[in-house]
Image (tube, rainbow, N blue to C red; front, side, top):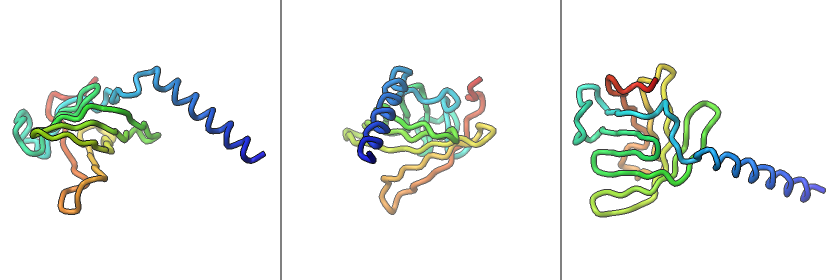
Length: 133
């Protein structure tokens, strides 16, 4: 009986996932779209190390671009994103967890796969004029 229940739960979960996929599963929520930087004074400077532009289906950093493969939407409004990233002649898979502050002015980007010497979590400010209505 337990095995049957688990099978039914898996089927229900998968059918729910299929329905979600029909609703553009790879679209980053609109509230996240825009330009961010580690410091407000660097806004508009695509070459700064902290540059990030989030669009409907990708992240563009100063030296790389990440195209969304899939994502998980969390109840708290944050998202975990699985992406194909390319930059400086290389390609790799990335995982990002992104969350916005309540006022939408601060984005926290966490990369759980970052090496020990790299920052795993970085806060970026939304650049002026980039708020999504």
